[in-house]
Length: 579
Image 1 (cartoon, rainbow, N blue to C red):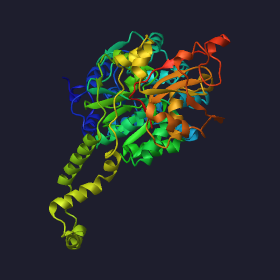
Image 2 (cartoon, rainbow, N blue to C red):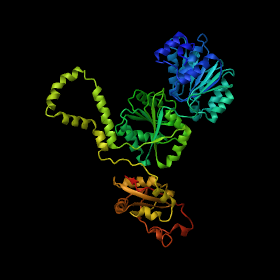
Image 3 (tube, rainbow, N blue to C red):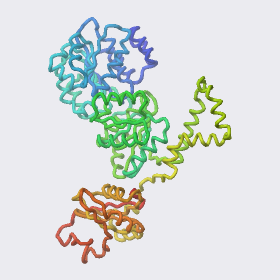
């Protein structure tokens, strides 16, 4: 393996490398640096976030830049403000002992006037987000006529964010004889198109497998009911006392809702999404980087370009719509050779999406049981004992107070004192899990398949102990299983109601509840409203009457009106409970 000392770096750069703690080159550095220093070859490097890409292009760039000239000689494009600032900071660290190198970060959300002033003074390397650079080119502040090296970092992320036109416009502004380097985690058709259009016979470097997640990441999932996702998230956080994680959600609303619930439940958490101002975003990220926050709940767009070290987990509260996004999510843990964990909370309807992701990353994911309350309390207790064994006791202030403390506690023997201390420390966990039922994984069993299949006899075999109820809302009212369960929850004051089969029609629905709950549920729903309309819940007539007189109280059956009402059946395991 070639070492940094053998690559031709100046003593000043080698000193910076030593101060940064770099010992031996990482694989992407070992392959990219000699190519950058040896010739003018264009390079495509496919590597995950956190594999040392910045040093791979940054160290040679610092060495090759002529500080005697004032013109801009290199341009680095990246998708977000955070990554832009991180790259600039890294380049400044690499060049700390070389002298005279001027590097400018150019991004939206900062004063454009200040950026224009710095450009007029002369900048050797520009690190920019595409949108702000286009603005500066339009104002004739950014002059790229002498750029000799262009680097597209996180190219796939830039394309996902819609920067293709901006990248094309920028690349038209730089000289045709430039060198171009493209770094990406995945190789999409759009990236191949950029390579064909703007690169000259590029060398392709592959770190790991194409479109694959990092090898040192463990991929796990929990199968849960949708309504239990937040409970499982809490259990996951509680079962990992030293967790430091990003929790990914699909929408801004979901992100905010999950973060607020975590905060209200006493977790060090906050949200990161597009509705935050830049100052709010910076405040959240500063707290997360300093580990004041242990859980960052974020959308994919808001988290793009985040560069945070030592994450223990990436948690997919919702699976991404685009399976390639999963690669970027999990790539934020398991960095720099460390182990990482990716966990997905998956309900039954998302299993197909999970299989597509498994195929994309070419890995089989591990199905895990949801941690039980006793397991969580055991892990927390073990972690607390570990800290107790190593805590520093050399505080003179405490020594002064010890006699009084000992006098007040002398009536307690050792075992009773330990019990009280542990009870005080674990009050929240004991309250949360003392009487909490374990979360049971949804099962796609033969019984459930029977209920979906509509085979003769399946109805009676599944539902002997259930009462079939009518409700006066259907699909035309945007009334689906989630809305039904929510309506029951909000009107039964915590009563756990086992739900069976749900049949949705256009203007009404049927659902089943365990027989002993039907009367109480009907009574509880008498004053309920949905979308401002009174809710009517009644015991349905027997199914044998559907081709006879009535389907449900006060209505003609749909077939007599010449329409089917668009019936769709949702079959639930009898494990399903509304509460």
